[in-house]
Length: 278
Image (cartoon, rainbow, N blue to C red):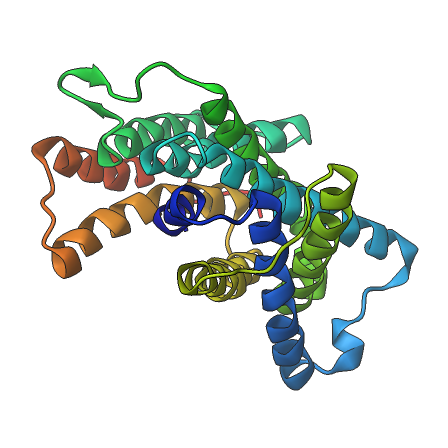
C-alpha cells in the first residue's frame, strides 16, 4: 500500500479524498458479492441500531479517516515515513487495550518495544548513523494519527468483528468508509473525481482489491482466532516481507542493519506471552 500510495500522491492528480472514496466504493461491491455468495443475505445483515451505528463509526475511523490521513501525509513525506504506520499500531493497540481494562504483562510490553526497534531498522529509519527521518513534519503526525485510527478500528471493533465474522464486518465498514468520504469532500470544498489516467486507475484498483479487499478481510477474519496482542504484533512483519520481496523480485539488497532488524523482530516475537487474552 505505501509505495503505491506514494506513487499516486506524487505523480497523479487525484485528491486524497477521491482516492479514498473510489478505493472503498470499488472494493465494497466485491466484498458484498463474496459475502452474499458465501454467507447469504441474513448473515450479512447487522443486528439492530447499535450495530448499524458501530459499523458506521468504525467505517468513519478505520476506513475513511485512516486512508485520508495517510494519503494527505504521502503528499509530503517519503514512503518510509508512511510505512512507520506499521510500527506505531502495535503500541497504540496495547495502550487502547489497557485503557479498556486489559492487563498487559511485562513480556507483552517488552515484545512491542523490541519489535518497534527492530522494525525501525528494517525500514531503514535507523542505522549506524542514527535516525534517518530528518526533521519530523506535519506529515509524520498525520501518519501517526492514521495508525491510531487503525488501532481504534482493531481494538474497539474486535467484539463486533468476531460476532459478525470478517466478511460482513469488512464489507460494511468499507462501504461506510466510502460513503463518509463522499460526504466529507463536498463539505470541505473538494470535488470527488474518478481516476483520469491509466496510472491512477491502476493504483486505485490495486488499493481497492489488495490492501482493502484482501488485507482488510484477512485482518478481520483473524480477529476470531488470534489473540489481540498477537494480531497487533503482526504489523511488524510486513516491512520484513517487503524487504525480502525486494531482494527476490527487484534485485534490491538488504543492509547489515536491516538483517539485524529482521533478527530483532523475529526474536521479539518470542517475548509475546504464550497465553494472551483473546
